[in-house]
Length: 67
Image (cartoon, rainbow, N blue to C red; front, top):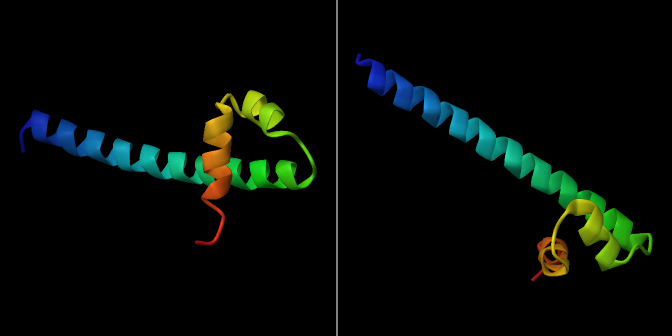
């Protein structure tokens, strides 16, 4: 197998692992943001602490709401 193909396979695996880590981190952030919001923490403060825009926090929290 060529070194380039092996490199591509390795990069593909790293990317898959990074995608999974990002998904888990987003789930954790969503859970903690929901908890903070339920405790009365303002969206603005959650946004500052998470380094997100307020709209991103609203979007994050909305992902938990049933349709």
